[in-house]
Amino acid sequence: MCVKIIWVLVMDNEELLKNYYKETDEKMRLRYLDLMLLDLDILALILKNIKENVELKNNAYALNILSKKKKVQDYLSEHLTLTTLLILLNSDDPKIRKNTYIMLGNVTFNGYEKLLLEALEKETTNYCISSIILSLGNYKIDELEKILNDKLKQLGDLLKENKIEEKHYLEIKKSIEKVLLKNSDFIKHEFKGFIDKRGVILTIMPALKNASMNEIKAKFNDARFVEDGILIKTNDYNSIFSLRTFYEALLYSKEGINLDKDKVKTFISNILKKGLISSCHYENNNPFYYRIEIKSIMNKKQKICLIDSIKEEIDNKLKGEYINNPSNYEFEIRVSEKENKYNVYFKLYTVKDTRYSYRVTDLPASINPTTASIIMQEIKGYLKEDSDVLDAFCGTFTMLIERSFIKKYKSLTGLDISEEAINYSKINANNVPLKINLIWEDILKYKGLEFDEIISNMPFGNRVSNHELNEILYKRFISILDTLLKENGYAFLLTSEISLMKNLIKQNQKLKLVKNIYVESGGLKPHLFIIKKIS
Image (cartoon, rainbow, N blue to C red; front, side, top):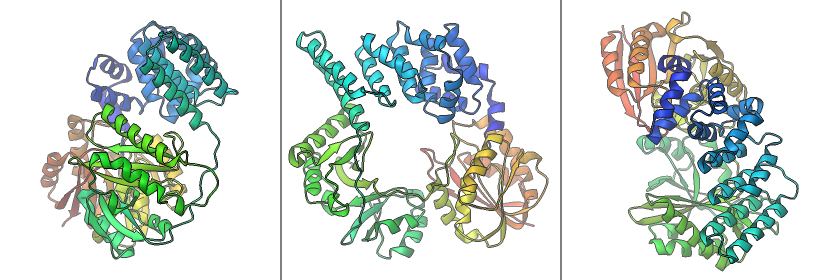
């Protein structure tokens, strides 16, 4: 993905920060924060503004969100000073303190745990206390269990004296239990396999479901479409991960389909009692740890109520054999709502999915590797062996790596205007490994080899661009596309700029739009344009 050129065209750091400060729409605020990840120099401005007591609430929130990324954590570990931190931690605004506590839990720089422990002693706002505790859970602290249990006893005394509301006490208690579970040492169960064939749902992209079915059916000839994906039956669970065009593998039982809400918890506890999970793992005298995921339009409070009722049912019927531990778990209970009916599945984390282990680095707008693989299956009929292949906006090289699994090729070339993207591509490609050509250059200035195939995830969507900027980039790129292709060569371009792309292709008489296909990618609805160079 060509990100640097879009960044330069959008706005400079000071302008971006000003727009973020005045924005009230949460989606737009998150878009600005995504853009900040493309140039970490903006963090220097944020830290400078904090020192000058400018926009403390907005800056604290920005650090909270941005510090989820490793490169931001590294930057803050080096540049965030105690003076700057104390301005935030000593603020009278509890929201500023809360965001700062969360940020400290993300960065986990040596010494920050002392600040959190001090804050735990003096903080009086209950929702801030929970954030401190959760952040402390990310540090290795001697006697953390004793510290948290002492805090819980202190709050319990306040509860008896009616100096704290019960709901706040229970919230903090829940945070402490979560941290203690997360940091508990337990031997995870080892998967041993299925004795008999089991139903497994492979979740797919509905828009390109036939591409997934073609790959899956070649291995599992009884595969069939069902409501939430493709159903297969197998006793060789590990073999599923030789397939590349599904997102998740979920254990399925027909008794767990189309349930009324009040039957969900009963089904889950009963099937666990029958050994759905325990029978395919070796015994190790430890309980199984799990989490619950609700896929539904219900609000947060309703989801929490359903999760609590499931947890309570499991606790009552299985007496410590299964423990809810959302931070450190061996399997997931998945509840999926469809028009007031519920389907229940189970996802194993004791079997590692290594299909995309090559991708150790990525960018904010990097394509999901499964999505890339599905696209390759969809265009398989257009691809030829011994082709010279280019990704003109290669980002982290995902598209070309997935192309390499489909058919033989003569050469793979990745080009990007971002030096960071090229460096990331080198790391990822070396993990496959592949013989590649990586070029740090603007595609609009490229002079060199012509290609049989050009496969690119174009810049689109809120995280990297807007329509006006795309219009400039796309117009120039499509005008030279024919010069990059050999005669009868194909370009496969993914973008949500559908009308713009159609119009630009029409204007180039050496290009023919063969097909454009609806795709789903990261919550967006782009199309894949298949373009042929003609005489």
